[in-house]
Image 1 (spheres, rainbow over the protein chains, first blue to last red):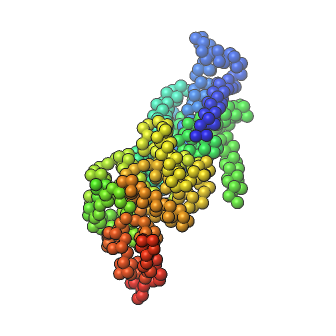
Image 2 (cartoon, rainbow over the protein chains, first blue to last red):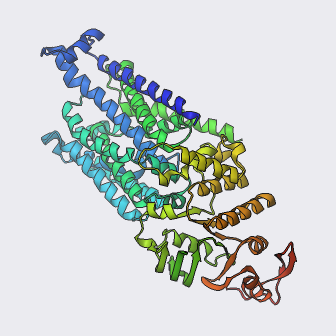
Image 3 (cartoon, chains in turn cyan, red):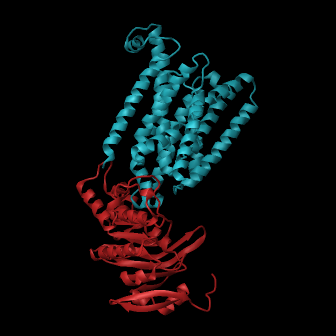
Length: 333
Length: 263
């Protein structure tokens, strides 16, 4: 097919961009370490301040940016393909908001202050709960409309409970901490976070990555796909639980980072000839690029003010999405 | 040889009994037209055979119980052309047709030479080669229908189930499609197609099954099924019956009076 070489070129470009942004992310920060020194420190055996900053602060931050971006891009591409809806995104299944609720409860009850990993663990528990409810509501026959509706209900409930926690918060500091956590950020994350989120994300990626062929068949509708050998129940299980594993883990360590899972598959779709299976890898790489770039930008724009990553992605993402809508309108009329 | 056998099939959807006591079998080399009024249960019958619905009764494909087969095993035996012409993404026509080969390919294997020749043949038969590189979602309804029919042909199965395949096609492509299904039957494959055009059904099908309110009311050759009495009783229409080139012509003319009681 004619698209093969342009697809390969796109993947090569995205891999190159991801690598460049990853290295840039390692070398940008308030400590003002020279480019050469910072990279050398990463691989040296010395235990001076520079090596410490590189290994304990910048490396986990860059790694998490890469992993979370890939998670959001991949899960967005899978959910759009599975639900055959270009507006689907990881937040749609209620996973992000239930993970947020779990984290908020950990802060609210003071658990997170007592035990550092309580917050990400509570967030993961929230994600699992969301997926169990959504799966139970949607049933085993693989109806995508029921999944969307159940996801909306779970999202609203989690939002209400989060507001309630803010409402009843015992002290203003907890309220502030909850607010800041919900904005989404990669600041001050450690290798512990990487090790905690890593296994869940890899599991989620493996589950979502195996769906390419089935998503292609689903282009022609679920019944036609079933007649072509696609086990709809299996696809639903992999899509829902795979998203829960990696998006739950991502939200657990970074808070909610919006718009990446929605916009990245949208931008890349025309570039891969719209074939859902080809969108998966491209969108994972694209998501990694966007989150790494945004995380570099928050450090460059306002190094003193701790600008939140989730705020930046929404500020840039929403107008961009409007532009996409505008372009679609021009094509339609 | 019996390819498909259905015995005592009953299906309820949303608490409503859609099919009851449906029993028939289809051998290889048959082109069966499934006819009946709207809501008679034609689509439900086709979807039951694909294992897409919870059913009562015994359904067998090639002597194997359909409920016990995996989706992949079913996909090797029966292809399905859905009534809804759904193509969700703006992919090229050739990509859509190539999807028909996916059940036959293991894992991440690429298309082989055999796959390519089957895809080309399917596109040639449905007359869609000319727009193989066009975007499928930008085609007209009839063109889209032909692309999706080519996709089903590319699956290359012993049994093809088609839900209103001629709807939206121009007369020449309607006839070409009916001829093609007839050719498939002559090659030893079987086709079951639901149809509303009684003229096409009478002229091209080797056998007709007439459904009414979830039951089979007639099953046999077009001459035996399409009679003045059954058309009046089931469809509530009067029809012209004739003959041309040695084949039967049936053309509905007007509603039969007195009007049929609403059900």
